[in-house]
Length: 455
Image (cartoon, rainbow, N blue to C red; front, side, top):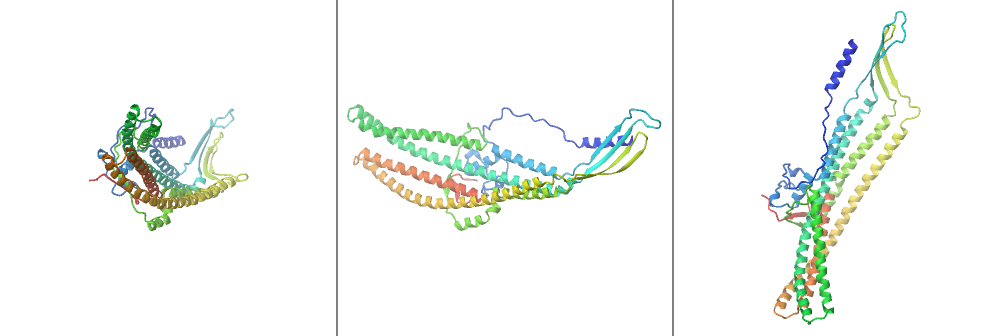
């Protein structure tokens, strides 16, 4: 009876500490937000954002930093990454728990009666597996390393989302500038096309002489239609990145400007790259985890052992009590395969870290070389564009007074139009590379946003 009471007490204590199940049905109508949410978190805590970017006010438009803030706070993929961090922390909790002892009980009922026998025989046993204790500290270190890796993976994903948000913001800005340039040129061609068509109908021009004009007129409309589609695509991509429905109106304000590159500062950052880039720190944590798993597999070579104590009584009413021990015999499996797998996995992570670090340095060096080339090209194109603008201004006055023909004026403006497109494309390429450089270095330098005044 005392044994039964003991079992009842243990079971009641076990049931009292159990968690209760809570159902959470799937949302079958999940949808993106249809308005920009209000953010209460401190944006200055978000890595890779400027320290003064803690003001989020969508009422006066979204600048490049506010777009990044909203994307980090509301991006659907980042929500999954944050869930992974919670899972890693839960696993760390589980790894720190001690293994439970094992309680066994049994009853034997005699199938025949003999003089002096009792009605039943009983046995109770309490045992404890010692093997998990040998690797418990290592398991806790593995779990803690997994948390560091999950944190760094999350941080790197946040950096990627910030970079994507900035890229799409810059892309949208240059698409707007390009649309203005195309629209202005279309208006000029439209006026000329209307006059040429009238002259053709009046019999003053032949069909062959209108071919070039018609081709240019149709081509500019094609470019505008294609750009309109691209603008809508950029809007949808940015909205999706920020967890918003495409029907939300985004009032993007401000512009992106470039700053001079300090190569000495970049070289200093390159030396610290392995200590500041989250993806490299995540790989480092993953390597440390794998090293611990390799060590754990070596410890697990030792035979599994469990100890306990057993109390029993037989049908002749003889009561016994004594210790017990269970030991596995490593005759066929000495963890050779497990050790080889963990060692090879550690080697792969070692090589992956080196490869990622070398690629990061190579990519940064390539961007710096491209930036030097783009700077030279932009200087030349900008100078040519300025000269053409002055020439077009003079030609416009001459055309108004009848000193040059419309064909000469339109041809000169066409040269300015194509050179302006070239300049915008070079500027956009340079800005996008600067955004990539910020992410690769983990820096806020080399690019600024202006046009929105903050209180």
